Image 1 (tube, rainbow, N blue to C red):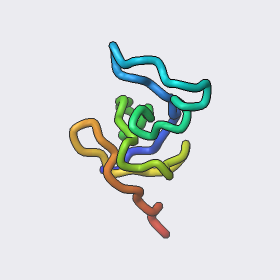
Image 2 (cartoon, one colour):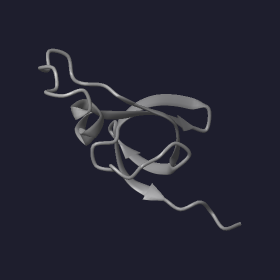
Image 3 (spheres, rainbow, N blue to C red):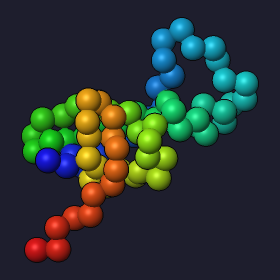
Length: 75
């Protein structure tokens, strides 16, 4: 079942060094995390594989990693 992205944030891993510049963290796609909704169940997932993902997109998730964007059903 695809999940819908509710929010996106930048979350560096614990103990990671501070980014070099103020915008460095915002540009690092490896630290992008999303809160997604699986029909009422919310979960935090990584967007490291989907730098183009945006709030409202539907994504296919496997073990906490969003793997691909999913088109909405035309019906």
